[in-house]
Image 1 (tube, rainbow, N blue to C red):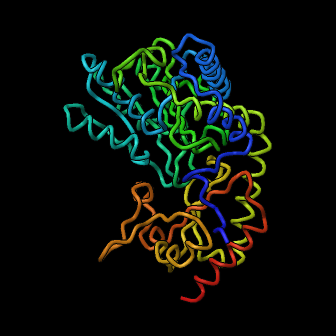
Image 2 (cartoon, rainbow, N blue to C red; image 1 turned 90 degrees about the vertical axis):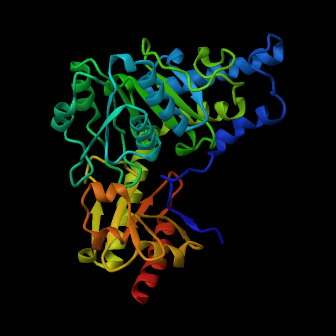
Image 3 (tube, one colour; image 1 turned 60 degrees about the horizontal axis):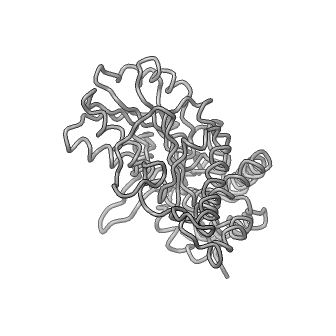
Length: 378
C-alpha cells in the first residue's frame, strides 16, 4: 500500500485536469514556439494562453510573467538579477532568518562577492517585525526579499506592511510565494511586491516549471544568455508541456480557491484535534502563527521524541517531514525553528504535516493511529 501522504508542502501530485491538458503536448503538439509555421504558431499560442492563466491567478499583466525551471531559478533570477544590475546604486540586501535556502543561499553568495547582507530576526511565531525592517534600511539598500509564507511552519509574513515600508524608501521588494500561490489569495498589487516567485510543483503542476513575476519597469540582469525567448529575459526553447500544465493548474487554483481553503483548514484542524486526542495536549506544541498561516500546514512539536527516529519507523506508511535531522553524534534543528527560538527539547520532536486537496478524514485517522502506536511504544 502507498503511504498516507501528508507532505503537500514538499510537493503535490499533478492534478488530473492538469495532466489532461498536458497530454496532447506530449504526443501531438510538439512544435517550437519560435517557428513561424502552423505547428510553431500553435505552440506559441499555448504558451501565451498559459501566461494569461498565471497572470490572472496573481493579478498581474501577462507581459510581467516569465516562465522558469522552477521556484529556485525564479528566486535566483529575482535576487541576483536585480542586485547585479543595480549594484552601482548600492550593495545592501535585506532578507529574513526563515527564508528558504533558494533565497538565503543566493543572498549569502552575493555577500561573499562584495554585497552586504542584513538577515532580520523573527518573533516566536516566525514573523518579521515591520519596525525591524524599517530600522535595517540604509541609504545603499537596493533589495528586500521576504517570503510570503513559510514552508516549515506556514506563518504568513505581513507583506503589505513590509512593502509599504520598502516603497516609502524607494526599494524594490521580492517575495517567494512558492507555498502561498494556489493556497491563499495572492495578488501582486494588493501585496505591493515588485518581484514574485512561483514553483509549479507546489500547486499541482509538474516539477521543473515555475514563474517569475517582474513588475513592469523593473529591470533584471539575465542569468543566462542566448536567443530572445521570454521577451529576452530567459533564453531557451520553452518547456511547452509543463508551461501548459502550470497554466491550467493556476486556472484551477483560481477557480476553486475558496472551496479548497475551506477543505484544507477543515482537514488541518481535524488532524490537530485527532493528534491531541491521541497524544494529549500537554505533550504537543504548535509552531507558527495561530491564525496568520497557511490553511494546510501544521507544524507540531511532540515532547519526548526525536522526529527523525519516528519518521524512520513510519515512512513506509505515512509521509510527513521532520523539523530536525540526525547526524552521527548529534541532532540538527532546522534554521527556521532556531530562528523562532523553539526550545531544543521541543524542536527535536517537530513534525510538519501538510494536507492537500484530496486529503480525507479516514486518511488522517489512519495516520494518527500509526503515529500514536509508534510513539507510545517508546
